[in-house]
Picture 1 (cartoon, one colour):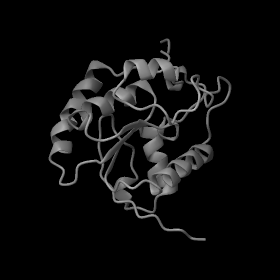
Picture 2 (cartoon, helix red, strand yellow):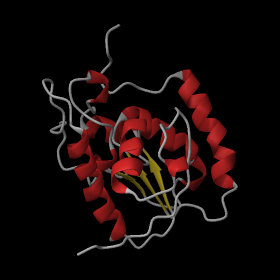
Picture 3 (cartoon, helix red, strand yellow):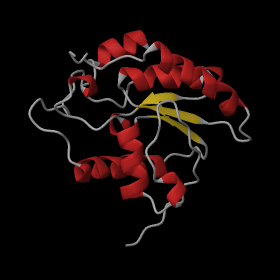
Picture 4 (cartoon, one colour):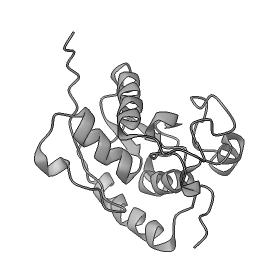
Length: 176
């Protein structure tokens, strides 16, 4: 099977994303900000899941929210310019380069490097004023976040299924 550059959602993925819409709409606190991995499948998922918020809250693509990267061509993101043209409702200004400079054809990102990237994202998030944030990301990213970056309940530490949503309250504590 040939891998596809920055693979899009399958029809099943679109259906799973649509099934999350009522859960999001029923939440007491609606997201005030939605952050997206710049990979196509996360952009598509988040665009479907958070469709009712489009135009009402910022939709931002963030490089640090993307899937574990390297070797697997499906995890290499498309050029920023292409993603921005295909997803005009999402602000790509936080993505610094048009081409994917994080992707390596020869080496897979280590879990430690991924955890460090997630930490940088959390520093960004901590400095935002929004208190309720939606994130459209990927299973390996989420698994690493909940196991390497968060001190959380065991129920949150398992593998995220395709189209799964979990809600968590983050408390930023500095151990300086």
